[in-house]
Length: 227
Image (cartoon, rainbow, N blue to C red):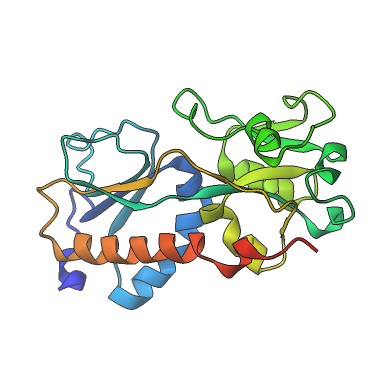
C-alpha cells in the first residue's frame, strides 16, 4: 500500500520529490496536503532543485522539470504551458496590449537554464504592439514565484506561467491584463528512475502530480476575457 511504502526509517525519507525551486516554494507545497489527505500520512522529502539534479546521490524518486533533461532515465512529457500577462485588479484601468505600455513590467530572470522562456520583448512582438519604452526596464525577480507575488502586490504586470497563476486568477488576486499569450517552447517533463518506478508511493504521487499540473494549465480562469 502507499501508506506502508511512504513510511520512512531512520536513514532516509521514503519518497524524494524534486521540482523547480519556484514550484517547491509555493505551488506544490500549497497542494501537498491534498495528496496526504488522499493517501494517508506520508514521509516525503520535497526538494526545490535547478537542473541537472543528482538522481542517485540524492536518491530522487520523481523529478518534474521544464524540458527533457534526463534521457538516461524514463521521462514523459506531461503538459505544455504558456505565459500570460497578469496584474492585480487594482491596475485594471490600463489593460490590453496598448494599455500595458503605460504599466510597470515585471521581469523574471530565468538564469542560464531559462534562455528559452519568453521575454516581454517576445510578447510585444507576438501582440503586434509597441512597448513604448525599453522592454528591459522595470522590476525584476529571479523566480516565477517572486514575480507573481510582485504582480499580486500591484507593482506591475508579470508574464506568468499558467501553472503558477491559475489559482490566483481563480481567487481574484490577479486578472488577465491582455489577451495575447505565448506558449512555452519546452514541455514539463516527469522523470522517474527505474529503481523507483514500481513503488506504490511513486506511482500514486506521479498520478496525483500530473493531475494537479493538468488542472492548473486547463483552468477556465486562464481563458477569462479581458474586461
